[in-house]
Length: 336
Image (cartoon, rainbow, N blue to C red; front, side, top):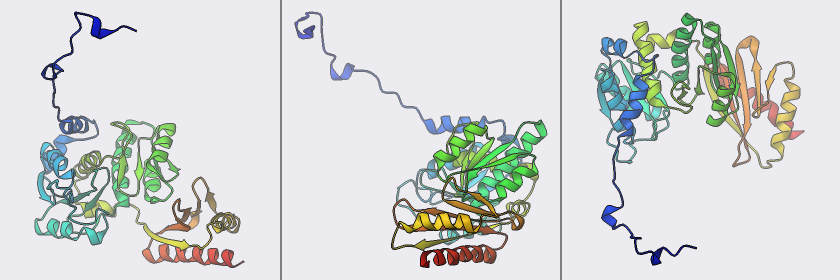
């Protein structure tokens, strides 16, 4: 082994001579990439002269979202945009957590309210009337816009969301002559299927938009830029845009079990009981009642002995009733 200490010409560098430090702002680099997307119509957005309220819950979104909107020519009204890390409210974009955002949109006569989560990969919108656009419809609206562009250009259309996401994405995709695919729950499962089928757009019903033209991950900046492009092209208010989409409602329930061994029995028996319906079992059991455009999805938790039950129908009452119906059947299975 060479003993470097014995070589007369070997010298250790002094600490001040170790190298140079250069700083680059990758926030702007990312925004450059978003604004360079052909589907992001910067000029149309600027011409629309939108006013948008941004609720960033005092996280990193308070830095990047106002920059994005400024570059899009949008008047930004910041709400909870100090990046202190001291969250202004529960970051889950439920109506109860977005009351301040809704009130501010109405008070400021804004065109839109935008809520982003702490790491700015999920987003939800508030319409100009203060009503939620509904988190599930974030992906639906963006997909509608991209599918319409692809349809005009004669390009193939494929979209992906997970099994627990709204049927509205399938309806919108098929209306544009495209093919919808459902994946197991989880971002990695969505992106894997997107890559396999060459999807134009995909994501999850939790407000996560995944647009592979820029990268294979959820991105609220991309979602906002595409949503505003759609709004500008159609010349509609956000509440009017929402009414153009199929209306569905999701109910969320669960079954608490004392014995986790019962979970597989319940799922297996439900597949038999509802065998006449369309069954998807790649992640738990999803029963699709095609004639009624309803579905119920049952998945076991990885951390506790429960089955999560999501059900969707055209009214909140029907969605809740469907979930309760399946719960009643499951209880009979448990008692047998």
